[in-house]
Length: 510
Image (cartoon, rainbow, N blue to C red; front, side):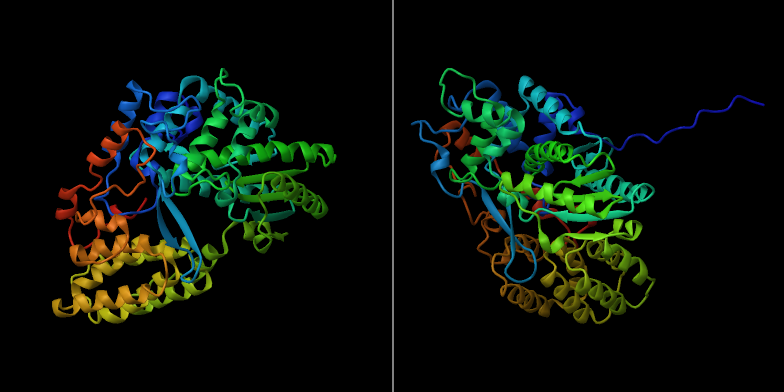
């Protein structure tokens, strides 16, 4: 017999950022889609701004002895409000909003430089090794860098599917029961001082905080300081909308993993459990339901010490691990999903999915599939009912805004020119009933162009109706202010050459 060929393994699609050098991880955090992850039209460009600031900060120091930004007169930026620009995204079509923060780029780049300074990055990596010391608690949400043409955000989603959903199904071989829970308003509740506790321990972090002028400030306290700079000096909450902030949240949550491990050991619960954590979502696998309840109680105690709380409304236990390892919206869509050639019936099936599982991942995926169906069509009769249905879906499911805008841009092609503006006005009026819809405004402006009127500052700068930067500049040194003021974040060539129909490259992370 011939020699047996070695089986080829598929190449790695991504790499955990903790495996990167300080230089490479700095470049990773300076990517525009890492700086601000939500979908926005492609004429918003941040790469030149971030890179120019980074180059300047490599040659000049514009931070004080405590590693915080100040202006030429030594005044701190944290003494000013609205340092970041907040883009509100409605969460439920009612009164619940998710504040997406476009972080002041000067603070952001300074923070990236501090974290990725050689010694600091080495300390952080060592600390994360300690976070993962207990093999019975697996963290699956450390940011990853794509190793191919795939977007980094897509690589992170594949990580969730492979390491949470698939790993959960595997664990059904070993365990009988599963408890699923998460943290209420995790990012908004993180106590910024706990970042330093996570990296250095409480005692060392507190003794170092601004008491000895000759001591080099600890990186944990430095991160704490920069986040306070962004937040008017507040010590509760970190911004949402950046992979860097996801990583900082992982520091605190990794510290919670250590504290939980120690409590479990003191309670003599043994090793007959396994915990999967993806950011603030927990899956606790046990064979004895009482052990599951004890671990959940211990987790509650750990989180309370950090100012965090479990979401009692989302805490549930099950003994059907296979079924409950897969999200219920996904199972529902698998059952409902069928080929339907009638465009309106197809959309009504998706509308039913939206009612049962609002803002779900399956809903977003279903709308992507619908977009793929209608995109190549050269004629759609009666587009108005379709526009009405898809608008209603987006109204109640803000997570779908970018794909909604893409579907709408295609359907609008089949509306007569004399009715287009009237129709867009009706859609805008419908959404005007919801306060704080800045994220939606960006996409409606992408469809309707210069005539779209919005108070959102990011909309105003698209067509030069807002000359000043969207960020607070007081408290920042003049050279950094000049870079921010003089570096355009709108690419007019992209803006003026985009086709009226939104292509999937603009919104599809896959």
